[in-house]
Length: 302
Ligand SMILES: [Zn+2]
Image (cartoon, rainbow, N blue to C red):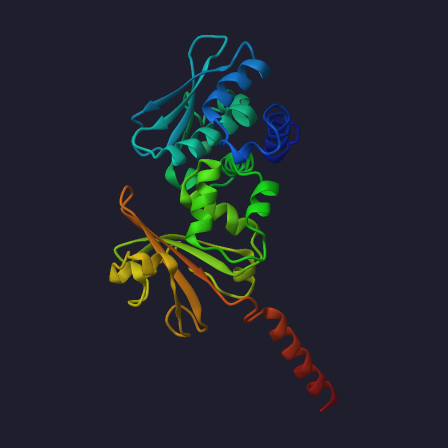
């Protein structure tokens, strides 16, 4: 299938979102998250009666979080597999991601011999949402389907800073993990915020809001080792209520400006999630540009 003829992830997610709003009501998230397993089974039977997703099953797939596989026999029957031992919230995003591969990429997966009997997706692609190509498309679909932006923004407006109470409430509303809810928030927030996922004081990965990135505030974890500062809750192993509420650190602890830090530990995954939030405005490249304009002016006239 050519790039142009492939249904786009957001368009496809919007189509299903509209359908669910129509059937279940626009206030459906007040009652229940998307039941993505039932949706994958029913919707695929509707759009491709010959080649549906005929089961969604838990399997032990070492090194993978989820997979979309097909039968040898034709007409193809498809199955979504999720790796054992995932929380219900993680499982939901995993199944939505594989459902996206089914809707958007199944022809490619069948025809391209880079895929051997199916698509196998790892933690980087699904949990961190850090894949490219069809992995990125599947993540965009999954996030849009499970956490529609119009609803999410109403719950947590773009200019509002977040606490774990609000983020936890949203994770519950959409039936996803806390990490997935925070990643969604970081996509649209106009506040300057960073999430760091760490273990034993070292960052595994981090994600930055656009506003933070534009002001030069981010944490690099690719091809480098980032050690959290000794004052961080995760390093002090302080996972008390004080860590959940957070504390304001002075300039020099995390960055060259003060930052609010809060931290929560996941025993299940043996990880700490730290959320850093800066004061609203703060340093901005615009000011540097202005400064250089003034400098140019002096140079020209001096
Ligand atoms: Zn994938």
